[in-house]
Length: 262
Picture 1 (cartoon, one colour):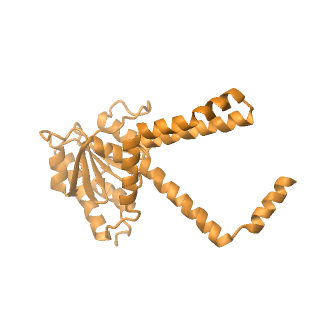
Picture 2 (cartoon, rainbow, N blue to C red):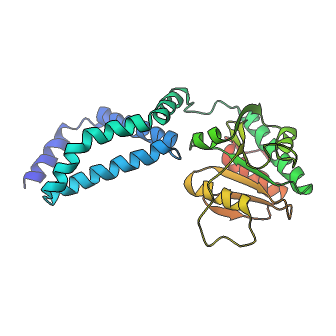
């Protein structure tokens, strides 16, 4: 009965416009922060802190006094140690949060051009049996992966993408990362999937593409060096043997704000 009365009083005092707007803003800020740190060590640190808080709540509810005392005694030291240990990651995340563009500033023409250049480069490399791994970043910020490669800041063109993956290029063994229509890094190494459902015929590039898309919302285009086959990987799922129109349709459907006119 007391809970019902409290809920009734809370609803009576609820300001539907301002409180709803307030909650929406807080939700959006937390959502953007999680997207920024996802895939970084800071994200794993956040999960660890969440687990400690969860154990603390359960220890209080179940009256585990010793465990509760232990966590409370070391809580301040644990948080301080984590802040010191992950200081570089926290600093970079905060800096990127300030620099992050919450809305794309690319025009439909620019979006269409970078998609078309990616398609042309993929088809060209497939015809020449040049292996390639092209990552197109979406909402999840691939900061850790970019830092492990050779950082660039170049417009996406067919010629540049092909030159990156030529066998004698020093950065051909890795992935090229495209963010907001620009190549931000190349020679990046991606996490390999541990899935046992992947075909034995697929090599390291495909396993890396699946591994990345299992953890992020990125789209990965893979060109097989052995067969010249183009694959598109989204959400850990591979679409193999993609031809030119299909590749263009997939990328356009994801990255173009406006549908192409027939």
